[in-house]
Image (tube, rainbow, N blue to C red):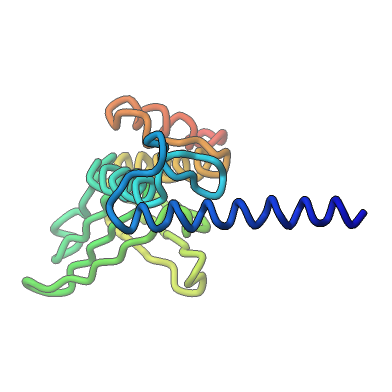
Length: 189
């Protein structure tokens, strides 16, 4: 038993010494032996900073792709509000007065539910944020068809996200009809 322990200690000592030599070479600007990229904790050769950079670039691309945008109807809302849906968040701009507005961004993963109230011509969306469930965001005086479409797209994003689907790989023009279909309520309206 003592011989096995000695072998383990000797092998561990060799590995530590070898790692120290590699660190010195890298600090001096030399590449690692045989031009092998350093492995991350899971055995991947791609560096963690490269993965983080590609993840940020993917998030930027998803934030720039507007899937749907709508405004409230002017004569009924003197300062029209805007709802913009991207693949990873909602942007709600609520105009308060001339040249003043309040902007709220909600990540899709933080949406608890979206409620739709309809009348003959208009509709109202209530968006409930997981972080502030007692203060739903209300967007009134949307055209009924646009409010229904916005709700279906948001519900489609929520269902897709809950099922683990990566919507970033799909082009927006192809994604919107599919998301609407997934988010469409089974109850006829």
